[in-house]
Length: 233
Ligand SMILES: *Cc1c(COP(=O)(O)O)cnc(C)c1O
Image 1 (tube, rainbow, N blue to C red):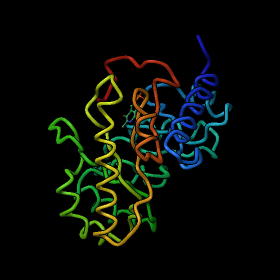
Image 2: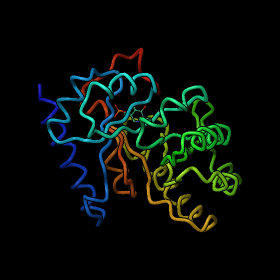
Image 3: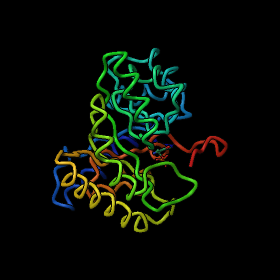
Image 4: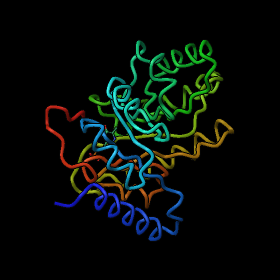
């Protein structure tokens, strides 16, 4: 079996090839290595192979791993955030990728004021209107944009989505394209840039890069398969 370093190298090459294919620079896309369910040792191995950005979907797991790993590593929270975890995660996460409701955005605003922070966030968009998934529907995002921009502590840097799982990456492509189109629309409506699109996972990150992803969240293709019980999707 290949090592984490070899798999990372392979993913990097595939990101670069997909970017070239779409006429983009490979440097426009950053890999978020999703280390959820894997031990700190696996993160260390990836860090030694040059990976610095990691994604966790649970606050507790992020907070457990971060202190035992080199401080130069950056962490994105990629899973939904609950109110009672905001205070703990804000100082630890470099970005909250899955702000999924106005309520949680207000909580983040309030705690950020108290702590004197200006967190970088993405809005999670429920692109296929799945009842099982978190996120703003595109209509809610349009309707709530002004209110969200009124939360001045939040640095809203873009959008994130998790399309319905389908092993064929081409099925995800139209959702990625829809997220990019919504980004363009919200930029116009809000008069502010939304530079980041976080989209694409192990099975569909190449299509995401071709459709404009700036962050791809890849877990199992780097670290191996996860036990089914812990699969969040
Ligand atoms: C687990 C997870 C990923 C990575 O999934 P893989 O299929 O292992 O690449 C990406 N994004 C989110 C939000 C996740 O929870």
